[in-house]
Length: 198
Image (cartoon, rainbow, N blue to C red; front, side):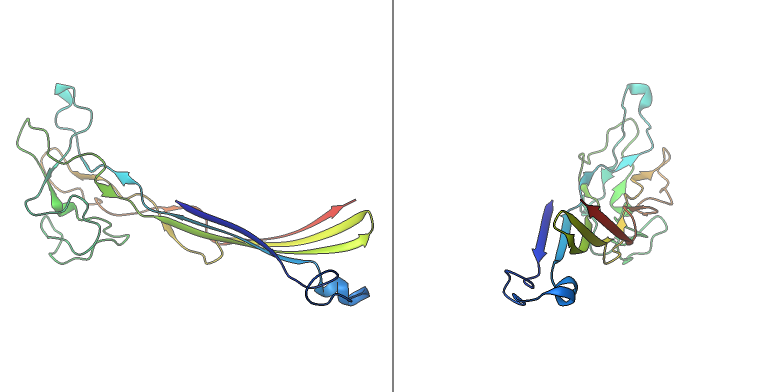
């Protein structure tokens, strides 16, 4: 996870690099501006691929699949190996098919699958928030602040978690396995505010 928070006061107005002699209306318009931002980046966390539980009578809480011969246990890039209704060469890493469910098969009867826990990387997240502030000196003891804030400034879509149950107890592929139907966070939101301090 990476987070960067910044605030920058524009160097314009009394005591600054530019416009040191500004007075009156020029000072009120040009001085006192601040820019701010927060950048948050997070890589995807690890999750486990599962089967519909065939072994509940034996006390098994989660049933794992076997890894298909030659397949990657974290197949979220490249293309599908194809089978069970998914054409070979179908691109993975998309909301329609985040991972390749064809890489996971039903183990033999009454046997645990050989796939480990938390082998699949989920989608990461990224947001950029932005703020613009203007401070006005009304009187010595009274100040007014105008704020404009944009949350998720670039309106970036952060994908949710794909369906991770790949097969039912008969070995039939779950039609939604690998599909992402949700998003995380909010779309772009804009906000204006005025704050009076006295």
